[in-house]
Image (cartoon, rainbow, N blue to C red):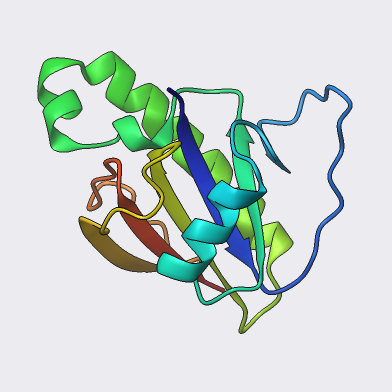
Length: 140
């Protein structure tokens, strides 16, 4: 099984199937249409569902347990999260928002275990913990 980082947007984006050097991309990585529909119905209010693909460590490794026992991996996940944060600042218009949900493919209909909101104007990266089954709303 694979861990998927779903993103819900209020507008469509073009999917690029070509390889790029971008740190963050929006694409379909592990999921199929049925998986994305389940996330949309259970967790999202946004109409367009994709996945976030990153070059770095997964953002769902950015939590206190890794901070204590695997600080190197925590720092790598933190850097990836900052790339996602900057990517979304450029992508979203002022007043818009997106939703991110992280789970194992096949577990999209499970209940969310953690929710929080972030504003893209500030970076509270040291104050958050991201695990699987986490719903993040990011507002611009």
